[in-house]
Amino acid sequence: MLGFIGVALVIRLHGLSSANLWLDEANSWQLASGPWHEMVRELRGSPVGPLYFVLLKLWIFAAGESVFAMRAFSVATSLVLIPVTYELGATLLSRRVGLIAAALVALSPLELYFAQEARMYMLTALAAALCLWSYTLWRSAAANAMESDTRVNGWPLVRYAIAAIALLLTNPIGGPLLAALNLDALIVWWRTRARAGIALPERRRLTLSWIGAQIAVVAALALYLAWLHLDSAASSQAWRTPLGLERALREALMLPFDTIAGQRFYPGDFAGAFGQLWHSHSGLGRFAITLIVQPLTLIVFVLAGDAAIRQRWSSRYAAESLPALASGRRLLLLALVTPLAVCVVISISRGLEPPRYFFYVVPFFLLLLADGVLSLSPRARIASLVVLLAAMTFGTRATKAAITRDSDYRATAQLIEHESSPGDRIMIQPREMGSPLRFYLHARETPIIGLAADAKAGDELATLAPGRTWVVMDYRSPLYTLAPAELATALRSPLERDAYTADVSNGVRVALVDTRAPTK
Image 1 (tube, rainbow, N blue to C red):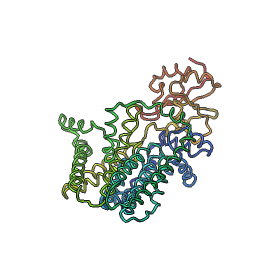
Image 2 (cartoon, one colour):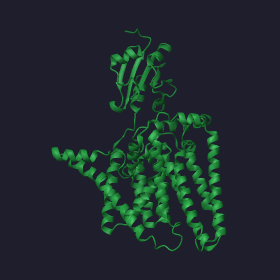
Image 3 (cartoon, one colour):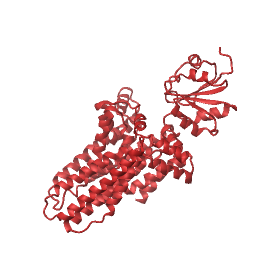
Image 4 (tube, rainbow, N blue to C red):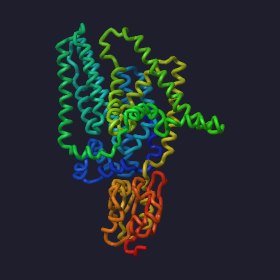
């Protein structure tokens, strides 16, 4: 286990600060680095929970606010997730399953990506895994107590309640996992209602204990919702567009491939590589890579799933004592499928990215995958592990090769700082991109005027006192693609400087105008 953690640490720390701090990460920095009262005010209108930002603020106080330092918090969280995954697998299925799943968590490119991002998703995954593990320990202790008519240790249930509250306060999107655990508890309760050898008084006491834990979680959630400005939180997500059922299902079904090969491979890559090889007899390397990360990985998924199902059916009558309580596979399936089903339903009308917002189910998928792989014959098992390792290697390489995440404001800040004069100001469109720009500006006292995405920059410039203004246009701005003459007309002022400071298709444009100069 220490070896897995060591390998994961090396992979995660390598290039940790190479990629730019993108918009969402800059928002994390802006919230966590400001005064407490401002952070509280902003979080009351946020759809995500406050726990991550509180912990990040404490982390920044101790480690600093560099890109490396802020992302290191997610790295530390991801390292804890590895042994938790092992313990979860060992408790539910077997130590070998836990060991392989822990290795897959350590090597997964998707785990790597979010371990190197200063956002709450890795903490959400850890809280979800701790929640499921605590429930599993309590369920196992409850089974033994009902069989032997003894009192169960209540600490696992207390830990479950704490982890569940932490999960909801980190990101409420973890709620479907709690629904899955309650569904599993209901199944257990129903199947043991009249089973011989069950101590009914202890069963009633355990049932009431579980209900009490859920009441505590719901009470904490109610207090959080009462503190939250629900209208502001809801309106902040109005930009999300509907995906429709077909696309929502496709996005959810791609999560296993994203887990193994990362997010840099797309569904049509293998067909494109095959066509290139067939018609031009070139691109053999690309074909081999896409062959591994797509068709061969899919074959591993199918074979592992089939083997696990066959083994389950062949042994369904072998267990003699409380099979419902011992059903680790069922619990993991519920923990995986329930959140993804909720994701599909929500995405029909308001799109959510499963690899991001439901990233917390990845360890559960990897546990099921490890269980299926171990159900294969020895040769098929080795071949499957080789395919998975190769796919993860290519996925890790592709993930690390991407040194920019969304709009990169590093060069923009350098240009402005190098060529700016005292009294200059900055106008940026859309306004939310001011967060990453301000992070990279060393002279953070420079005034930044934010414009809505549909605002007219020329009208805003006309209201300002005469002076030099750096107009920063993200690729989301309607001004971004205008020709220089058209941009000067839109700004109602001649351009003294016009440059693209990042990749044109997904970058930043900067123009300098001086409203003291006569308009041509």
